Length: 358
Picture 1 (cartoon, rainbow, N blue to C red):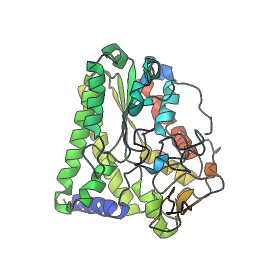
Picture 2 (cartoon, rainbow, N blue to C red):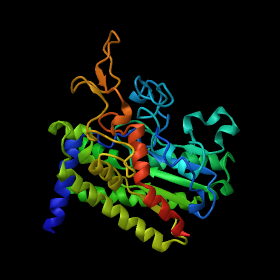
Picture 3 (cartoon, rainbow, N blue to C red):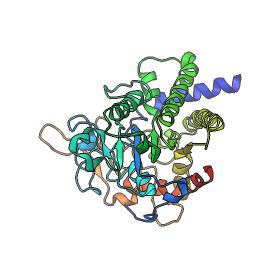
């Protein structure tokens, strides 16, 4: 029991220190498709989650993702991604062999834009409601249900689809910001994982052939935390807590697969992928080098500012590195396009396992 208490205290410290750590709103190695590994050819990708997956759902006035210099690498201007370029969604779409699915907010652009699926992820959101007034995961799935009811998508569409779920960090940040205590944190973690499992089962029940869910990234390595060590070292206490969270998720997904035909659920291990890149200071091919992977490319000139900040006269209140490709992190929370490319590269082992699930 003492060990468990230490874990929960670590978890509490983790989120007290990381603040909005979960608010997570290219090289072309691996451009080839791995469609055959799914055991079927996925035609669509449906995405649910936060800013690690969001490709433009938040309104232009509400997020840094629409401010210069976001999007500087791709598409060349701010476009709603929390990075200088492509994010996790774009790379999973590449793996599936399709174009990145259209954000939900652009759903009325016409049928031809719907052919690759849809991205329902909103930066800052969680499994439950967080500190931002945006759709939580249940509501995001409701949006898909509504599109099914309106015959925008059909059951056969979902039968030839893959779902990506990237969410949960913001739930803990919101829990602590609302005065949540260490005494009730254990039961809250269970609530989050239980609700996440409900959501995963719902997506599969709606017809999704394969559901990929991410583990929580090493929050102790995010620049907003490593700034205290001049970006030299991760916070081991926080990362110990994150590995515990991920263990609960792993156990839940294993149980789900044991109860379900064809093992439709797979974890994309962001924790191991991030750590692999940090330890090697490169992607697993050694082709992308990161001089200091813990240091962000873009950050505010002081703690009151962030990447993209300007003052009343429009003067920049942030600095940006000379070469975003040399940085793993774009801002204090989100990877660069090159960072995501390295994570995608490190995830190949997990992605390769998908074919063994059939």
